[in-house]
Image (cartoon, rainbow, N blue to C red; front, side, top):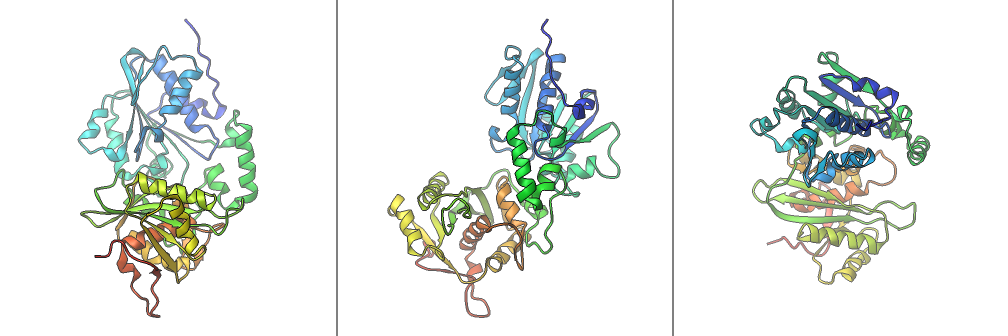
Amino acid sequence: MRTLDILTPRAFLPFLDESRYKGVWGGRGSGKSHNFAELLIERCLMKPGTSAVCVREVQRTLTESVKRLLESKIQKFAVSRQFRVQDKRILTPGGGLITFQGMQDHTADSIKSLEGFDIAWVEEAQTLGERSLELLIPTIRKPGSELWFSWNPRRKSDAVDRFLRGPHPPPDALVQRMNFSDNPFLTDELRAAEQHDKRFRRERYAHIWLGEYEPEVVGAIWDRVTLDQGRRAEGPELGRILVAVDPAVSAEPGSDENGIVVAGIGAHDQRGYVLDDMSLKGSPRQWATRAIAAFDRYDADAIVIEINQGGAMCKHTLLSVRPGLPILEVRATRGKHVRAEPISALYALGRVSHVGRFEALEDQMCLMTAGGYQGPGSPDRVDALVWGLSALFPALTAPTQSGEPVFALSEFDPFAR
């Protein structure tokens, strides 16, 4: 019989023992996910017949799961003969399996399909909602079953933090903080990234690398609680879809990003749905190509583009790539934060949902205040979001007391009837 040697960081050694709840929280580069993945492969080998479900709050595709990570561990340990990797699951020794699911896909009835599982591993557990946690815990009820949680904390009010790090954690809970300094296998590339962020991204360093809670901006017009409450795993039938573009002033290495956000409005509920964030740094040709790719992917009705910086060249750039493309040009007449406020009000009223997670976009949103943007650079992703949703909710373009609209449509509105 071949012996399998798995090198385990000292900080993770307590998790090799059995415990009903196992939670590892901390920042980037700590090896949280890698260690749990290796522990799961080890458990399946040591206890044939083990069945596990790898859970996220929202999982639209398997690329968002830990399936690839587990596959890499199977190859690393040269145990491919004991496991059968299939399209949507992994068969484990002794007739067990590892499956991958999103909690928002489950109801109180459908979750019962997991009752016989031995392990539930919740990756990115900071996104797990209270309802999902309440469904999952009593479902994984088999004698000796375990629930694993790995996460980078955002705020104390997150369900997993209140459950495992609050004043009254459950009995038989093993909870440990792990950061990059606890990872003896940290790569040179990650070490260089940590040092760079320590020097140039001090406002985000403690959260990203040390597992501290997200920094909060006083007076922010969006907050993560509202974003999470409105989040959906998938959108409904949409009445119309727009690709909104906020082009950068230049394409130099230090230039801002070109904001590209896809949004639609529900055909029946008339709610807004943010479908994708495809922002990038690049030349006019590159952002135009990306915007048109988004237009095709989502079968959009038009591209909304802000023309304050480039004027007619913005439209010309798009038409040079795709002649005849339906384009809605917009021109800002007020500041970014002023344009953003009515859109943030829609979120507060429960009128907008994000279909999935868009971390870079949501980071910018939570740094926008009534007095302006409090983050580094320019909030290009937020600008694109605001343009798109403003065009989908035309009542927001009503004139202000000064007689000027928040933004002006310069050409035509292809949706006008």
